[in-house]
Image (cartoon, rainbow, N blue to C red; front, side):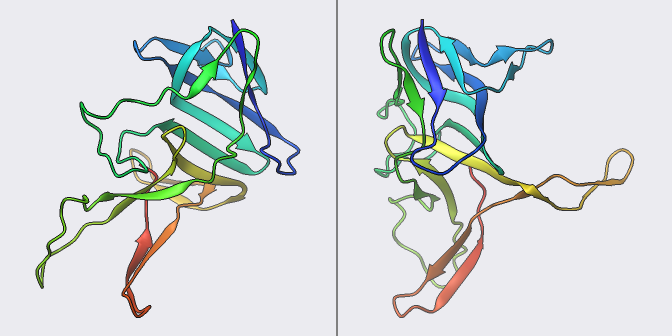
Amino acid sequence: MGIIKIGSGGRDLKNMEFSGSLRDASWSSAAVGHLNDDLWPEPGQEFSIPVGDYTPYIMNITYDNLKICISDNYHTNAEGQKRGPDRKTVHGITIRKDQPYILDFSTPPVVVFDQPSREQDTFHPGDEIKFAAVLVDPKLDIMIRGLQDTAAQEDKLIDAPNPSVRKPDKSLEPTVVITRADGEIAAEGTMPFG
């Protein structure tokens, strides 16, 4: 067994915890957290898991008032390669018996455009062009998604089956701005994280 733990990455944080699951190249999973009665891992700061090389299946991280969800990047990676048989999954979370692995988000994330593809380089007047972006850690090739501010809630109307209003945490979806060479804004909007 080895240790995985959450780190601050040099940030001034008071509360840090995480839970979820990792998977290896054979698709075997390792729970990260102590399993509750519903068999979902409870969050904490440090866990023992089997030695191996992993990628996140799905993991939830709390840094003070910031909630982050991460997963394997099944979109285009930071080098512009789409998911397919020629691109191997990065199993960069390396758990070793004698050295704890610290998940601390110390690698600066990058925005990667999954659409349009790099191969699609010709457009004509009147064409509708769909842009889709994801935020990735280029070293681990993981998606950083589901960013939420737990200190702020927003009213959200739920339609089915009984209409009601609830107050989920405020979503921190990024705004992506596309500009022309002269700086004029051509389009902008919020982008989902994968």
